[in-house]
Length: 94
Image 1 (cartoon, helix red, strand yellow):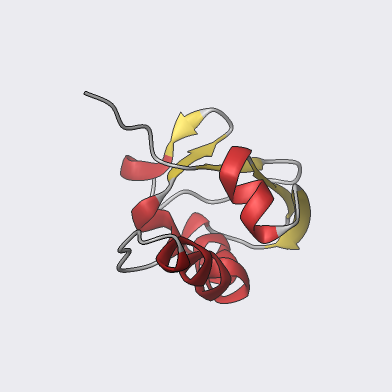
Image 2 (cartoon, rainbow, N blue to C red):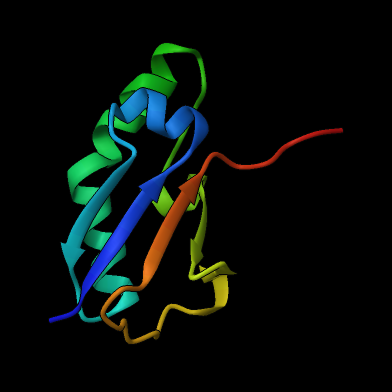
């Protein structure tokens, strides 16, 4: 099973207290599920304590990149050794 790097940036890093972890996952879906199980509840709790309403899994309220490509259309991706999955808070503005 490929070993991939998962990185958290900005507020996600601050709220989770971790900047990078390694996990074994064969598919993008598997990796996203592992990350949500491990960190989703903690991140939701931190956001809700600050008055931010969040629903769904961590990838539903994050910008997620696999090797610098948005995962929105990559749900079926097979992962390779050394791939990097990056989580950012969503970008908002007006």
